[in-house]
Length: 221
Image (cartoon, one colour):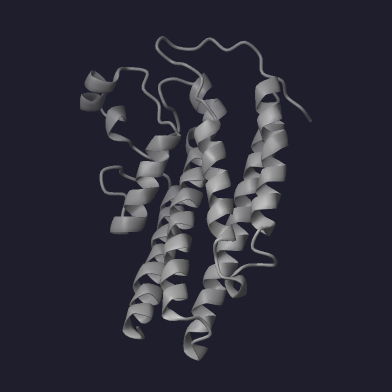
């Protein structure tokens, strides 16, 4: 069940990707969710933060000890938990509009918090799934089976970024931010079909949160 990391012949100029940005992103989603109004959260507002924190500890230990499969399973579990909480809260927020159960200020604050959670969550999914995940991207160079064509992966981009460039979490965060802001990936073409579906889901959630909920809150100010 546990697969321990063996020695990997890394290509020149390629170093293992630090995991602290992804860990910070997970904790940020839990903290933002805890700031939602009680009526929009699933259970106590602190529940999601506690769950992801508890799961993140063994995930980091598994990564440091080289148990790749266990780390990946825990990572998928963390992101699935955040996804379920986010979708449930967006649904509750939409249902609260007709009855005006929330004040305009709460709607605006909730929309902003959920929008940021949406950006961070999909950045985590893209980072986890693209090219087989962070372990596969480290082992295989150049970036194989890519779901996204980042500019440094093109012929012209490699002249600037280097032959062995590979995306890291910040690159996926930038991609996710652009998708939620412009409702499209902007400078990064989407290649894989599963990635196109995720991008459409993210854009749909962003459209729901920003346009529908934000506009409704402003109208009743």
